[in-house]
Amino acid sequence: MSSKTIGKEDVRHMAALSRLQISEAEQDMFARQLGDILGYMDVLSRVDTSAVEPLYSPALHQGPLREDTAERRRRREEILANAPEADGEYFIVPRIV
Image 1 (cartoon, rainbow, N blue to C red):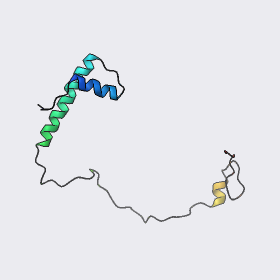
Image 2 (image 1 turned 30 degrees about the vertical axis):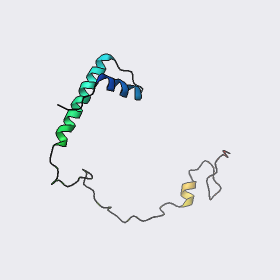
Image 3 (image 1 turned 90 degrees about the vertical axis):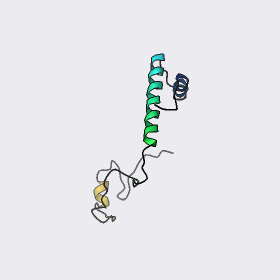
Image 4 (image 1 turned 45 degrees about the vertical axis):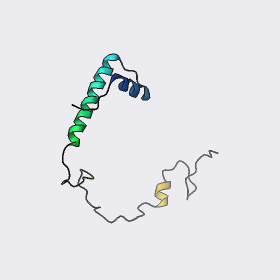
């Protein structure tokens, strides 16, 4: 598989850094799984990608459907009508400081 191996000591060190408590069985399992992941990364690193264009996003992006302009849709009176307390121009809120 991989020339790089992950041992139980490495797993214990990563668990300590992550503040995780893992059992002996979990240490063996994680060491094996991490070794498999590194082995797969070795396989991927051997793939020739020189003729492949970089993919910046897998989603197809469309431009905006409308002009992005600021609009005033509601009047101040409509907005302040729902306020618990207002002075006609601003919301009145309790002083915090």
